[in-house]
Image (tube, rainbow, N blue to C red; front, side, top):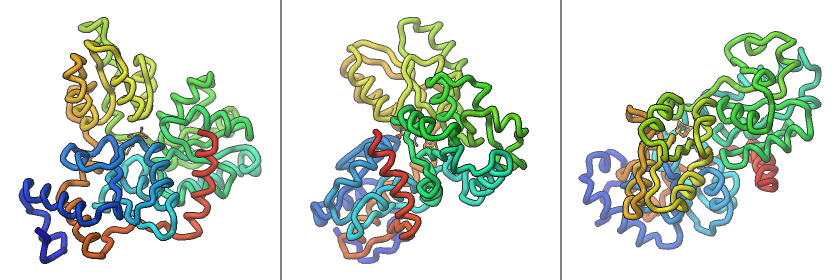
Length: 366
Ligand code: 13P
Ligand code: SF4
């Protein structure tokens, strides 16, 4: 069963059935030495191999707790970095395809955030005294390190309200990056007026804001978004509700404010899955999040008579999550079984230490 040549070239064209059989065989050989963590957006042919599943927060906690020698992370790059930062030094995290990034995370870079910080200092004086940097977990490790170094913190789609409370209790303003929608929805839920949340455009001088706008803002929202969740629109909800007045709508907070406002429930991927699972049989749902998860829920909930419908008329998949396919998983596992960790994720030590400060602040709060 084992491949004689462990280069990826020999896996890319493997037929599906053989690939699945080889994944099972390699997992059996590795036993408890490897744990497979899987995000909810993973495709079905990979998800079926998961030992543990969850949203970003749950997966971070699971990575910090596992004793396995190898953590095979079926998710995207920033999630594997978090697993590396929170796991022990003798453990190895591998990401089956390094091209599995997050386009939202790429919308904020350390160079741009540092420039923003410098520009804010010319308007507000020492920013470390007036602004708390808060990074969504969907960001590179160096941005988490920036937060660790500047009294800031990480948040996820689950705990953003508690983290914003923490941040605003310490300093008068928050710089929130990279997802403006999660930041705006969270600020709105906290009662912050929309005109006190200004969008910082990193490609313009002073974010494209006047000094008065910067002074007035309680939350500066980085001009970033998720390319998948931006497809969902409030009009989709209105049309659906006209057809199904008793139906329920649930969305991820990466959707825009109008979508979140028009939804009955808003929360993380784990929250979405748990809320629908706990709903009475026979309920009908419109779901605003990535298609792999929505399809899985539709299949799982069908026996209880629950109807699950995707919010957008077009297909919106996370193309980077999709990069983790069975061929890459088979390649990763067979290499591990042969003693080689391909695609190890190793955050440089100083960066990891500072990022851990920001992550641990978050984990202590929520
Ligand atoms: P969750 O933490 O809710 O799983 O969200 C991660 C993500 O990338 C959603 O697009
Ligand atoms: Fe990033 Fe959006 Fe994909 Fe989530 S769905 S991993 S935010 S690109």
